[in-house]
Length: 165
Image (tube, rainbow, N blue to C red; front, side, top):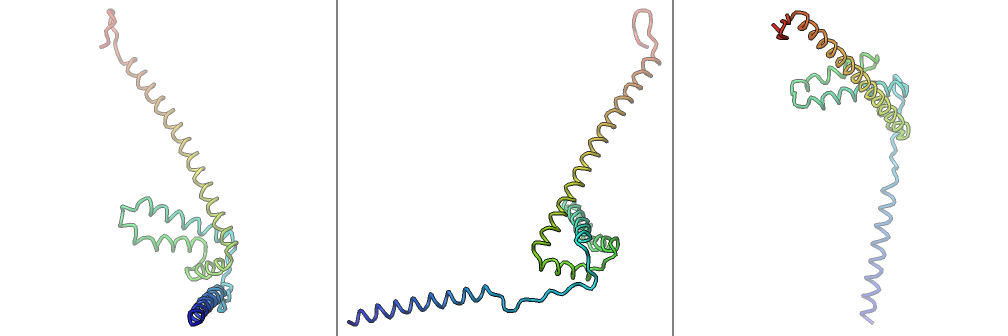
C-alpha cells in the first residue's frame, strides 16, 4: 500500500512539474509589456530608407574590402555623416526611423530586398562599364601597336639585299 502512495505521489509531482513548466513556457512567450511604436519626428519614406541603407552598405563594403588599412576606420563616422547630410537626415532621425521600421518586420524585409536589388543593379552596371573599358583599352592598345609598327617600318631603311638598317 505504501509503495502505491509513493508511486502516485511521485507521478502527481511529475504531472504538477510538467504543468507548471508548460504554464511558464506559454506565459513567457506572451509579451505583456509590448512596446508602443512611436512615429519618428521626421518620417522617412521606404524609398528614402532604401537609398540611405544602400549608401551605407556601399560604405561598409569599402571598409570590408580595405580591411587591411586601419587608417580608414576612424573615417567611418565621417562617411556616415556625409550620407546623412546628402539625404538631409540626422543620425537621431535615422535611428528613430530604423526603430520604427523594425517594428514591422515585413516592411523592413521589403526595404532590405530593395537595398539588395539596388546593390545588384549597381554591380551589374559596374561590370558592364568595366567590360566596355576593357574592350576600348584593348582596341586602343592594338591601334597604338599598329601605329608603332608602321613608324618602325617607315623609319627603317631596307637595303637591296633585304636587310633593315
